[in-house]
Amino acid sequence: MPDKLQILELSELEKRSIINGGDELEAAIVAILNEKSASHGHIWEGKSLALAVVGEINNFPAGNSGSQENGNKSSSPQLEIEGGLWGNTNWGYLSVNLLAVKENLRGQGFGTRLLQKAEALAVERGCHSAFLNTFSFQAPHFYAKLGYRVFGELPDFPPGQKRIFMCKKLV
Image: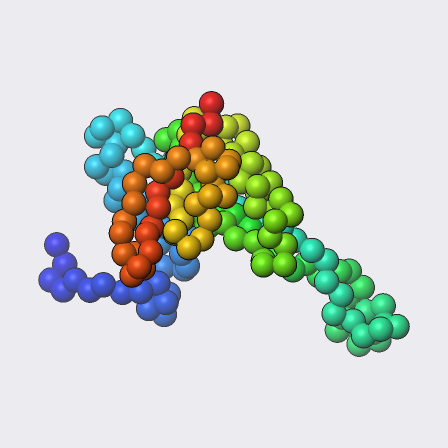
C-alpha cells in the first residue's frame, strides 16, 4: 500500500498526467470494482447510452451563406443540443442518469421520446428493467405517466423537497 494516499479531483489527475480524462478514470474504477464482483460471478460491463435532441442553427448574418474567401466559416449548418438523455446499461438494467429538455420544448413529447428510445435500446441490449431518480420539484409525475413507480425516497434532499427513486419493468 502506498505510504501517502490522496483524494484528487479529475482535473488534478489530468494535470499530473495520471489519467487522460473521465473515461480512463472510469475504466480504472471499474477494474477495481470487478476484482470483488467477479468473485460473485458479475463483471461490470456497463455501456454508455446517450441520446440528444438537436436542432440546426445558422450563425451567419442575413444574406451570407457562410462561405468566405478565408475559409473561416463553413456552409454546413451547426447543431445545437436542445435536450438529451445520459445513462448506461448493465446487468439487465437501464440506469437513466440525466434527462433534460429545454423549457421551450417541454410538453411537446421530446422527453417521452428520449426515454422511450433509451428503453428500446436497453431492451435490445438485454435489459429487463430501468431505474432513475428525480426530485419532487422536477418530474416524478412525468415518469409515473410512463410507467415508473417509486421504490424509495430521501427526505429533505434538497431541504424541503425529496429525492425520488423510481423503476420500471421493460419486458
